[in-house]
Image (cartoon, rainbow, N blue to C red; front, side):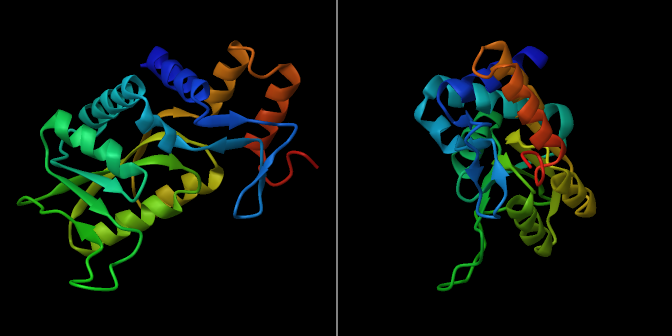
Length: 210
């Protein structure tokens, strides 16, 4: 699995789904300056990579959530990956909107659930965990068991650890920030000084470049 994580990290870097720029950081919507920008939506345009991602997510589910009998996609970026995984595992699929529809039946969850559903939710990216944990909450409000979350990549922010623990929700990802920056260094995408800055951001996102 370790080599597989490196492969996924390398693929994300190759297609620029992940961009590292420690000397010219990006400003996120939260106002935080970050040396990384991630757009995992790019992955669906690369058949070989999206297949590897789906196979990896299937392994995570089989190993960590074997009781799961429904695959859930978190809108919007998690939906295509959830669809492929549900197909590979031959399981029912639902998807969860960011908020209920303001017309019709006002649904937030789309798709039919089997008897005694046990859902694993799939998302593309975990930052603080806010969006996916809102989806978890929406599913649990329907008295449905969410056994955990599977995702492609996590920034490993301390807030996400706190939030997932508070929500009593398990999280497993294909790769993570630490593995990503080490792979980038190995491929000479970043130099030693860049790697040092990237590690500083991981340890203190608000003060890393002060």
